[in-house]
Image 1 (cartoon, rainbow, N blue to C red):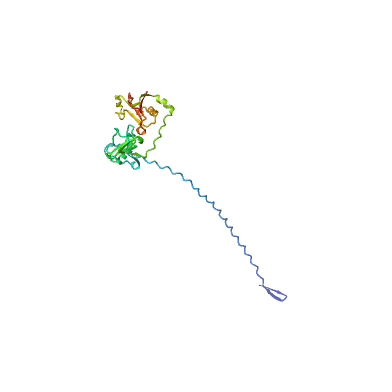
Image 2: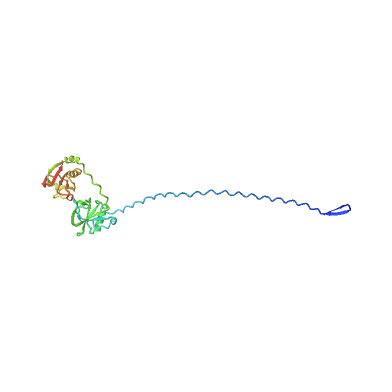
Length: 283
């Protein structure tokens, strides 16, 4: 408060206090930190790979080696018998010498020792090759006698009717290779020039030819093969390509059921006269 006297008067007045200093402006807030940079986009999921093919299944292990059969006692069931199927031809017999089969067992015509049932006979056939014998293609079973005969190189068309035997063929065998085609007709003349005519009849041999060791030594000595051909020339061609064949006999009397072509391993010196037959020998 200030007091002043002016011309005998006293005045009092108030003096406003100086205004206060203005408050300093608030300091600005620190700038907000920049937003974080966006994360890089996630890589796309890998495309599904083509599955690699599975490795092939390993081949089955071969069966353990079997001890050779001693020929005594009944053969045990072979593990492959259950997987082998069979085709039955009733009242059919096949044997050596042009009658539709060759023998697995020796001497020829022998049955399998110690085998008295059909299942055991089939087992003996399947296991023949593993025992060191020829591959068995089927069996001839004699049910009344209980005898088993193992066969190979079976040609059903040349087997014979026989009510006492039944033929069982394995159906798991690979198909037979196609038969070789006969030489063309123009070559037959050349084939026939390799043979000498013996006579119109059945081939007959000197007495000492019976010792050649082939089958049927009495009336068909040294028979190498008995088969079916349509002509004499075709029979000659079969003899020409077989080194064991020394002569052939062909007849026009029998059809294929009678195997009209016979190949012989001995040299005939005469014939038994019979019109439908022709006997020729190699030169």
